[in-house]
Length: 70
Ligand SMILES: [Ca+2]
Ligand SMILES: [Ca+2]
Image 1 (tube, protein in one colour):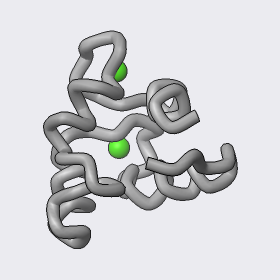
Image 2 (tube, rainbow, N blue to C red):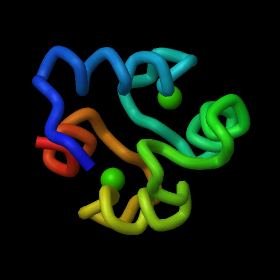
Image 3 (spheres, rainbow, N blue to C red):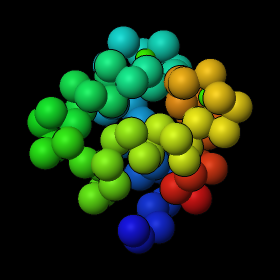
Image 4 (cartoon, rainbow, N blue to C red):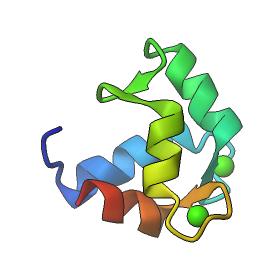
């Protein structure tokens, strides 16, 4: 997976966080994945959540999202 700039990461986050809550829930990720063949840059959604959700609340904050991609 290639590195993205901070602005690119924020844009992707915003496109997934459709309710604008500032956290990505699995449902939002699934909705996003359905439009993108079930993957996020080739990473399976379940694997992505497991890897990116560092505090284990099953939601991905912008900080966690950035940490994963930065
Ligand atoms: Ca959200
Ligand atoms: Ca989290």
